[in-house]
Amino acid sequence: MTRIDRRALFASGAAAALLAATGASLADTPKSGGTLRLAVPRDDSLDQVVRGAVFDTLTEIAPDGTLRGELATGWKTDAGARVWQFDLRENVQYHDGAELKVRDVLAVLEEIGQAEALGAGVVRLELADPNPGLPFLLADNRYVITRDGQGVTPLKTANGTGCYLVERAEDGRHFLGRRVTEHYKDNQAGWLDALEVIVIPDAHVRAEALRDGYVDVAALPAHEGLLGQRGLRFHPSESYMALAIAGSVGLPRQVGQRGALDDGRIAERWWLA
Image (cartoon, rainbow, N blue to C red; front, side, top):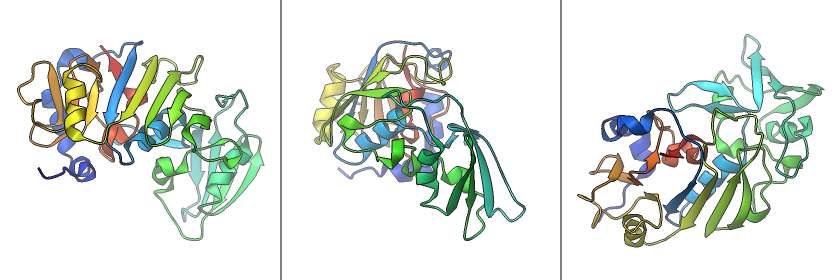
């Protein structure tokens, strides 16, 4: 069986077909609680989901393509789109209790241009060349903000400002994240109590795990044994099965199309109905 290219599917806009396959009752008001269990292949899926759950970026692209602030509450640029200024969100904490500092943001922006602090909550970035799309670029999970530039691995010590903190993790194998209490995204994102991601290399085994109720979502499962199975939905369609989803899973009316697994934001955006 030919392996499905997830990125091509999402980039093509085929994800819009999800609207036809999603029950209206699951696309209404998100519900809080429960643990979403996700089976993924041995590729970059685990890393993508963990980055979206544990870390934040300065900006975020919503599923409908709208740009919005995450750790940045506002930004502006000069007429040439070379000099940018970002206002940072106040009172943001890492999972270890430390506060977000300007230097943490500078560590990321210095990979792009000349960055400096203009105050406790304002940073300035000067680019070598104009880039009107910079705020969209900074939403990419390559630019997650970490404490003192510590990085995102190993997973078991990952320390971010996202909705989920690491409870247990093993690189390339497994992740269990627990919802942070009193997060700045309360009542806006992060509906799950916990998210568990399990790496299962064999597509047929991932399909079996979903069919037998061991997981709620399977990425790139084998078609055999799933088509015609009651209670399952397929994204973007049965013919191009990037995800197979149990009927108990609620998901937004629109799913991010820039990358697989809802742009890696599945932990924040999906819920259990």
